[in-house]
Each structure stands twice: as structure tokens, then as C-alpha cells.
Image (cartoon, rainbow, N blue to C red):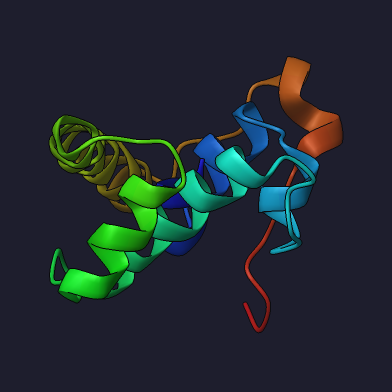
Amino acid sequence: MAICRVNECTYCTAAQAIAALRADQPIEYPKLQALAAFTRLMVESHGRPAPSDVQSFVAAGYCKKQVLEIILAMAVKTISNYSNHVFHTEVDSRFGRYVWQPQGR
């Protein structure tokens, strides 16, 4: 979800309605907050986190293997998000109540 939010994919953000991430608000569970924050950092930095960022992610209870899993998720979601951008994918009616638009669009 953090990847979709940074990539501003309106379809995927509606389909994955996780309120805190949609609104750029903190998540109440520290380990999940660390995952969301590190994932967002990875997307925004184009996969160039500082060593201290990786250390903080690991200190939150994750391992370096999970950094690779985030990279895989980034690749898959970027393909999905960009495809939805190019083809202007309509949000399915079942996700209609979660329609989201990036600010300023």
C-alpha cells in the first residue's frame, strides 16, 4: 500500500483501503509503522536508503532478507501502478467508497 500511495495509483489505493496509509498518518503498531516508513523511503529514494535507515529497519524487528522482499514488492507494484496510470483503470464498484485522489490533482 505504501508503494501505491507514493506512486499515486488511484486504483490500487482504493482497492487496498488502509486508512492510515491512505492519509499519510502514523500506524499505531510500531513494527508496521517501521515497515511502511522504510518502504516509502525505498520508493522515494529509488532504492537508495542510507545504511542507518537499513539498520533502523532491522532494529524494528525485520531482517535484511525482508529488504529484498520490499524491493520485489516495489517492482511488482510499480508495474501495476504505472499500468493503471497509462490505461486509466476505473475503480471497481466494490471499492467505490474508497476512491482516492492525490492532493492537487
